[in-house]
Length: 294
Image (cartoon, rainbow, N blue to C red; front, top):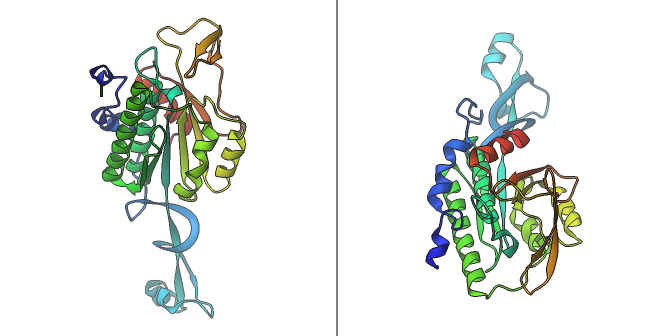
């Protein structure tokens, strides 16, 4: 990689993403009540190990679930009912297409997107969940299976750093092809992200394609998509108006900026938060916590 691309805010550094752990987690938040790391408890009855309550035995109940204490106290057979331990998975999707590889302030939009996902990932593993990754962009997707604890998050960080370096190399060498539509890039997500997972998609949502809304609707049928839109107005912000931007291939597109920031590009109808790439990380962490909390 060219020395220029080692500049902080241009290159994505694993050390900086690891250091976000303390910023992501509020220490006054209690740990999840799951007995086994990697799970959290729901109110649904199931076959877990956590006891929900006891009731009188009826014909057909599993005799292995007899509660000796309740039976001895009442003289009537009682069985235990258990509370299902469900696995919480937070699946991170990082857009590294060419439209993300620029910035006018503190960091490239791609770097700001990775930092925001790292904040969400660290919070997820600290609360007992598992975290996985899929990147979009040059060189094909980088996929990291969902795992828990610090080791799982370190694997995700390694995947983001490798994919970001490949995207920068492709952009610098000029070998990157025309930017694909986001809807097409998300086509394989349903085969990769586990059912029931929280899917955090960090993107500028440029070149979304006409099928993006439908694609997100398909994802939401068995998963929970959250849209993290990364904007860039630079230091102090751009004045309100429309700006011509030349993209790869020579085409010119118009960028609309309002007095409140860039117009939202993400589809409506899904949980959504916008962050500023040039803003401080502490501000990003506050916005994410205010939007989604635990």
